[in-house]
Amino acid sequence: MKEDFEKAFSDFIEIIKNNPGIFKEKKPYLWKFWLIPKLRKNQKRIHSLVAKIYSFSGFPESFFDPETEDHLIILRKMEVLLKDLLLLESFEKAIDTQKANFDEIEHRNKCIQLIEELKSLSITTLRLQLKVGLHSYDDNERQLLSTAKVMIKQLDNAISDQTVKELSRQLEVTFETLISKVPLLAVTNLSTMSVFPSTTPCQFDLLVVDEASQCDIPSTIPLLFRAKRVCVIGDPKQLKAIHSIKESMHTHLKEKSRLLDTKFAPYDYLSMSFFDLANHWCKEDQRTMLKEHFRCHSRIADYCNDISYNNELYVLTDEDRLRGEFQGRRGLYWGNIVGDCDRAPGGGSRCLAEAEEVVAIVCEMEKRKECNFTLGVVSPFKAQANLIKEKLEAKLSTDTWKKMRLRVATADGFQGDERDVIIFSITCQPNMKRGSLWFIAQEKNRWNVAVSRAKSLLYIVGNKNFCKDSDIPHVRRLAEHAEIENSYEGKEFDSPWEEKLFNALKKAGVETVPQHPIAGYRLDLAIPNLKIDIEVDGVQYHRDEFGNRKPSDFWRDMTIENLGWSVIRFWVYELNENMPGCIKKVQNMIKIKSNK
Image (cartoon, rainbow, N blue to C red; front, side, top):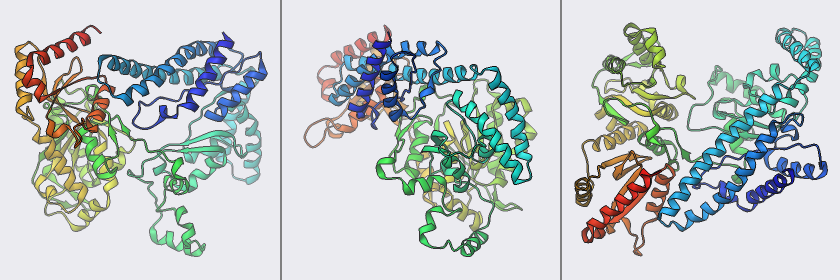
């Protein structure tokens, strides 16, 4: 079995090298699956294989403990997995041909299933390795780790440099023992010294800095010193780190230290995050934008895509899995409230009319048994958030707050968090103070964070007409997006032929839903329980100047199909010439999907 695995694994490496398109954008995303075997026999050949994998993944050679049998389980699973990768290669070719037939749909669904298996096995592998590592200490190693806990506390309380140096030296031995068993450690920037007391450089093969746009540069330096390579992940369109130092003091310190030259600009403490610094120095081929979005309802994500990401994101959210519907609404909904703003004693704006409306909505949600979702309330101003929180605390029990995971805060309090439903009190009224309006105009990133915390429904409370006429682009565009969304309410058909097909299908016993929303699109007619999308296409809107189907249709179909749907398209002339044949085609698809 060992020889078979080695050959299969070598083939796996060749697939990765020869087919880089597997990991390209606009293709099904495959989780990179790392596995480093360390077997006892045939060491020379194994060492060569490990070197190959090491150069690709960066994991240490001790990824699997040779003293256990657990790694053999993963090896068997990998044999099956490697064969599946060959199917994925042929799947890529099928996408390029774009032939809409049942065989391709079956193939596509199979590949989606394989991708989910890849994800599951990747997580299983890591958990297994952690379990193996943590249970493989001998008695001496356990004693070392117990002693280390005491020394770490002493290190935190140490006063003299000599004590710190001595404790660090003793902890280095303990740290080497720990890292030899556990391939993954997670820390915050500020806890680096207490968790990693050793000052030896390049202790880690790979450092991953998440939420890097919220990390300042100085606190990241100790981590960089301990790593061979670094992967920086962040979103510059969301919130940056909050600093307590004032701008005047910051400028004074730069002048005093002679750091005003432009060559020091990339390292500026206040204006540059660690993400900004990494982005400044990385070459174009070292940057990757993660364009696939899977979290928010398409109507919510469309707004964020519009104001912050230049419409470069591909919204692929499976909306059938979203939890959070109120009064039959999902996506964006605007509750129009006209009121007055007053200036809070500590600064910022408050609107009593909006606050009372938010409280009424939350209380209505709490009464309804079907409202089984998590809930958040967000406002641009801390004073408004505090006003709403005080009123809700007087109305709701502690159990209700816990059950709904209810949080009331500004966007800063929701960074990195999410809720099924978010109520957004925008606190923008005609009489608001100029300073408050200026604050909102300068804080597009906070606006983006506030909106994108909602997964299923963003319920906006505010003065819609005032926002529609606003000179602030991100405020005006939110009102415009909400108006587009509300325009679909009560609308059933985009064309007379959609209605004719709907009626013909209904007469044949096939119930469909017009204008069903999914992944940023509206399906002409849908059978949601079987995930069947039926499209009616007119030549004017769906053919290019050469008479071919427009590429946007192919990309749309691929997006929908990757969510498990099957797409059937009819030209208007097909419906006109052979409506019974079109009905039969839909019925055949229903039989295929029903038998799965």
